[in-house]
Amino acid sequence: MTDALTPMLRAQGPIDLSALDSRATPGFDGDKADGQKALRHEVGDVLALRQEQLYARGTTGARERVLLVLQGMDTSGKGGTIAKVAGLMDPLGVRVASFKRPTSEELEHDFLWRIEKQVPAPGMVGVFDRSHYEDVLVARVHELAPPDELERRYDAIDAFERRLVDDGVTVVKCFLHIDLDDQRERLAARLDDPAKHWKYDPGDLDERARWDDYQRAYEVAIERCSSVPWTIVPSGHKWYRNWAVGTVLAEAMEAMGLDWPEPGFDVDAERARLAAAD
Image (tube, rainbow, N blue to C red; front, side, top):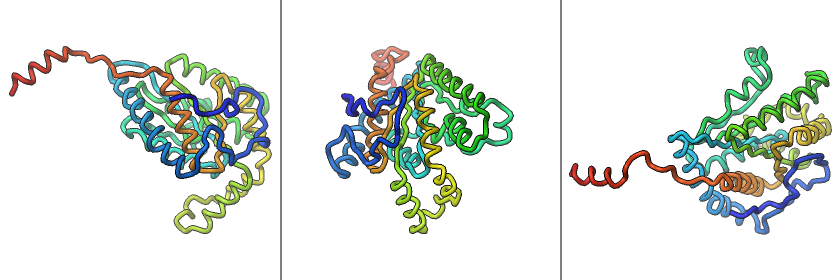
């Protein structure tokens, strides 16, 4: 694949989220039907092939692995993205970790303790539904940690991600960008559909009231923790969001130079044995 996404989506420094159009579709000229088709076939074919090669290499001792980090406001579509993108790969080689409010055991350790336990093993694609960034987002907005502790966490996150890369992890970080109107529509849709009531949390409205605080918290986190760059994905159109995240992930896996591992046996000899066995 060629790099289909424009450089404006790559974030590695200061950013103003309010200036970004959540319903833009940079890098893609088609409509919803075109995007869904491209995801299933063009992107999906690459993901399926490279993920199988990655898994196969892991069985022979190779260290490569992939970590996809998804962050975004409530209703930005983290779960939907996982279903549509990770669902294009063999579930045998994919592990999804979802990070909720820390448990009492987790709170007894440093904030990265529970995260490090979920880092993908060699040969695996790991997906984080929320992540270590919750500890500088929620903590900042709700003042759960003093400023000096937040500063320590920013540095710890950046160092942690650099360490992952040094250890053979391809880290892909996507911020799913929506605006207030997008979220209002999606919350209303959950209330209007009994099949979606389970997705609705009354607390979402309390967090929505802190929208500006969360936007600023994300801007700071994106700027401070950018040794591994972010991709800002306009997510007002769900179909585009899925295509864009899938494309970013496929491009990253293409860049790994994956191929099938060499067999640890003599193929011709084994073919002869098989023929003799009959």
